[in-house]
Amino acid sequence: MAKIFDAIDQNLRSWIEEQPMWFVATAPLGADGHVNMSPRGHDSFSVLGPHRVAWVDYTGSGVETIAHIRENGRVCLMFNSFGNRPRIVRLHGRGSVSLPGEQTFNEVVALHPEHPSTRAVITVDVTRISDSCGWGVPIMEMTGERDLIRLQAEKKGADGMEQYRAERNARSIDGLPGFPLDEAWSTLNRTSPEQ
Image (cartoon, rainbow, N blue to C red; front, side):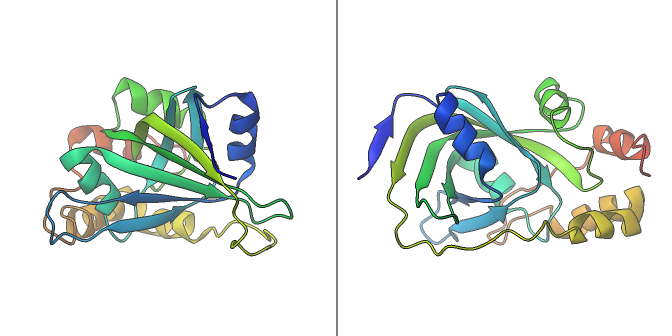
């Protein structure tokens, strides 16, 4: 049932873009480090080319994905269908982190709705594309996106989000460097139309 693809073609791209959520898996190099898997959603994912994808990374309670990618670049994205036709697609590759003010950040953020929780853009150069049956994934209905991350960011404001990231996003749970705070981030948030 499994298939390896040479590239993300238009059919695969369309299927990926239809999925309301996906999962990001990363791990540190150290054998005693924690493997991490995070769910993602909202209109934040882009297929940039046959071997390149990216997403807008929102501020969260942790920073594992960014910390692991900064350390070693290894990443696997998994998409699965919750509809009647089962399918799982995995994209393995090497990730990189782009910060506000960098060209890649600006290009990817422009493809999606403005979000006050935006902290970075993650880009993945895809080295392996595969699918599998997905028979073990349940059929579920999408009833809507949660808007809590936006509401929290709006309530905290630019300064509150900066403080939150300084307290919660500076280091991974294994102590790896996480999200760097810099002037570019402060400038982006203070010029946001919703702030």
